[in-house]
Image (cartoon, rainbow, N blue to C red; front, side, top):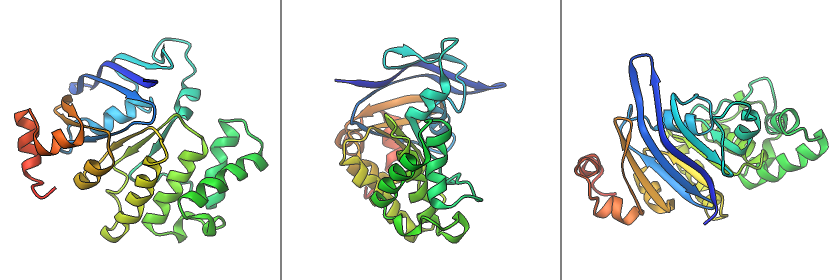
Amino acid sequence: MNIVVEIKNLHKTFGQNVVLKGVDLTVNRGEVISIIGSSGSGKSTFLRCINMLEWPTSGEIFYNGENVLKSGYDITKYRAKMGMVFQSFNLFQNLTVLENCVVGQVKVGKKNKVEAEKVALKYLEKVGMAPYINAKPHHLSGGQKQRVAIARALSMEPDALLFDEPTSALDPEMVGEVLKVIKDLAQTGLTMIIVTHEMAFAKEVSDRVAYMADGVMVEMDVPEVIFESPKNERTKQFLSRFIGV
């Protein structure tokens, strides 16, 4: 299998607070991995370390066989290949929908504006936001903002897309529209790592599901095993709250 990114023995501390305690993960091309667990278990920090928004305290991250943590590695280029979709959208408020999807391509990807707009339109079309290209973010609903944020990440044509609880800031009626976009993307063979509280969604779209607690990867397996016959006692206790999944 073609490995996109491989994480070995990742640790992250903030002062005295040890958040990640030696996490390993190998992500294969085209794979969808969901990470579940209680708030404060280290899921979001782990995701932010994968694309280097947080610098790990120790460990290794291999991308195309190279350790991105070694000195002299071009982190900006690597980050562009690990697209990130945040729970709070993080759109530029002063830019239109189209401009939001163009700016990274021009500044980081060094594309010309015409080419960048063409790519942006393709992905805005894909997430159903092409009719809103001239709107500013404050004119959009939460679900629409998140779909623009997904199109923006896709416009960089990343090797993997990381989702940090993409529906947690949305009103319940908007959750479905965003999950549908992510499901559709999963079927296109895009490599994705999704931190989510949406258990039924994780079960449906994932190739593998990881349960995290207290900064460690407690258990990882195919969705059927994790949700129907987890081996670890802690996974069982966590999931017992979601009976009916």
